[in-house]
Length: 265
Length: 268
Image 1 (spheres, helix red, strand yellow):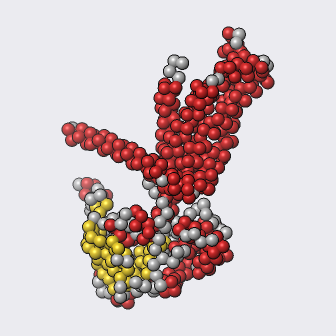
Image 2 (cartoon, one colour):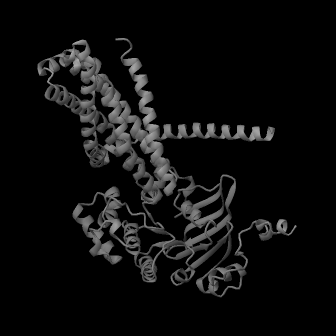
Image 3 (cartoon, chains in turn cyan, orange):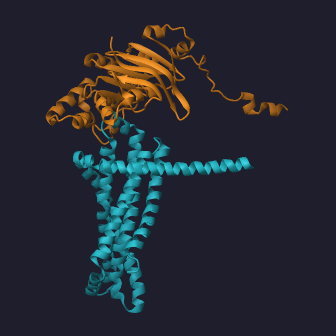
């Protein structure tokens, strides 16, 4: 019995040590990526634009469609509740604040992690499995500066833009449902929204959130790909971990940021 | 003859498992040296040490008189610009065409005008017979063609030392013959030095100048191809002639067959 207990304890200890070691490795990886970003920008600017296309432009369809539907659902649900209190015109405010403060950055980041983050992990994991990363190192080209850096900045630049497009499409979806379909007064819809949404407090804070989520999702995706065991199973496991870890990181970070940004104001 | 690569008393282990035990090897300039042995005997580990990807626990690995294991990253990168490595499955960059793969190092490490790079790339592709495949993507190339494009990429900057990691794996006999001839011709024409890690005995013995045989992390035999073919050493004989049983047993070490099948228990 004590032997089994000791074995169990050793297993737990091993997991903890491995976890801490991996966290340290991830932190070093992130730091090296930042340090070599100057080289990435100086020598591989074209690659960064290419990554903005792959991570950002190719995510547009899912972001636009999702934003539209989320906005339409918010419009329907908001109208349903607000009309009971005779303030259905405030639905514009509800849709805009919900999107700009929370749903825009969070849902766009979750979609970004599933669409672009998983693709980055799989691509880098496969590059490693097919020895493309080793070949690059053998050719005296730094893979962090050439492969990781452009993808990191491509993701970080794309994410706030995608969140902004998501929010804009959501507001448009809310407008379509409540003003065009249900018949809420359009002037009241826009004017209440304009007076209730504060640029500094709501929009800038939303942008800050999306930048933080962009950094977290892209860093996690790239690290998981770079650290993936070079096998089919290793790459598939890394892709799954990217989506799970990114989603949890987004929700956890969202709570922390919200607590600091909107504490009872 | 001056040695380009010298490996002296090298020991290496992954965690606690020893992989190389006191290895000594030399690769003279202008020659093709093969390192042969069973899978997992440490051949590729030696190649990685020559490239500076792995560092020995003890001993020295020197290339052109410089100890590779003592260089910092910048020194290592400078040294690697004079080396080329052909990977087992080519390791072509899948997002670049055959042309761009070969041009990769020229664009990264030189300031040559694009017109000159184009001429040089076409010359390299012509050397491997694939000038006509310049615009093809790696996914459109057959295994043999991909290996030849990778070879053209390897010689892009006319390296002093070329390393080949299992260059014949997975190739049909014609492609294998093409690759082995190219290795010999490129070595002689470009005046490079080559190290080939392989377990394809018959193909490699046709083109190499010297062979090291490895087993369990040590060099068990060495010599010119003719010496290896005529060797009476049991391990070398088994390996060269592909005999099923010998010093390397057919059965992996394990419990007795009867015990595994629980035959004694059934009789009892």
